[in-house]
Image 1 (tube, rainbow, N blue to C red):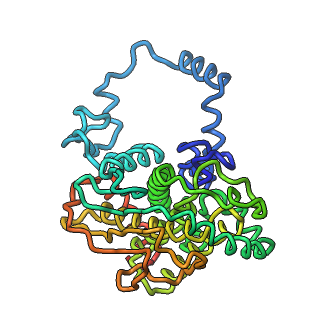
Image 2: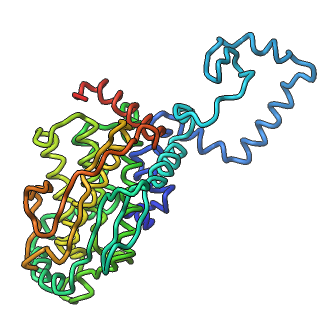
Image 3: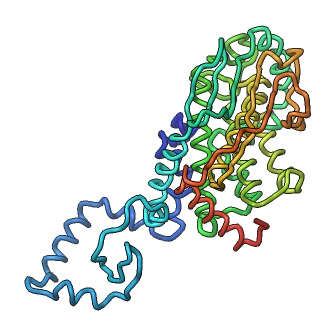
Length: 386
């Protein structure tokens, strides 16, 4: 969440795409090109390059045909076998994004995803994110004021955990990349496309959660009582759903699917435990109610299912559509329980879940599908079962 708020130097989407140096913005440095990249903006260097060209340029040099002879022919554009190309590339080819900068690939994939969703009001205090074809993805109904008031005691009691969790709380302000890299063995050089894919998923989660926050306008604990005294600056936007919960659970879901893990595999269990820990730390810090975290967990996992459906691009993609009813989070003093199942058979009064009718997703997000396959190839090379 801090990326979009500009915290820790992450100003807007440009900073968010860098994921505090762990993502693509940091790749130049890892490749040993950081100094060169910085020097390219140096006016002294620009002047030197101008003079170097003037000193070496031939007024009558080799012809274009002669230049082409030095290149090994490659087939890159529209049947062309010459380099530099004679023909222009075919229009709108998904694989073409392999040649673009990482943050540009991110923008393109985000546009594909957002082209497939719409946000709208369905009833009083109730809003839905739907597929553009009409199928629901997730519906969230705001809790009542009584729910928040009854949870004040939970938030106050969790303050006793602050000293023990302080380092976690502070370092998890920005996207929690180290938590995932340490668990899934991600590295900017070895798994750059996997990290790019996670960035895309995180940005999709953040844009979605912010839209729900704006619509639902739920208070923060400090707005009910000065006794909360959060240990971090309370964000300047509403609380439910928790953005940290949404982020951490979409990563847990997408990584599990990417690595071909079952819901009960050791890695999947640990991914969910870390996501739950990140979620509850926001309550410990005094920034959220437990119900915010539960809503974020439901939102993050559901968005993850939709994201994976687009990534896989099968002709019959499905996801679990869910409805979160805040007023059903009873008796109001209910604590956060990360072990609760999100399956419909669990019978939670605050959650309904059904299969979404099949959607032909084979052509909905070809660039995102390309990114998914690149990430899967990295994981296969790392000996993960995918």
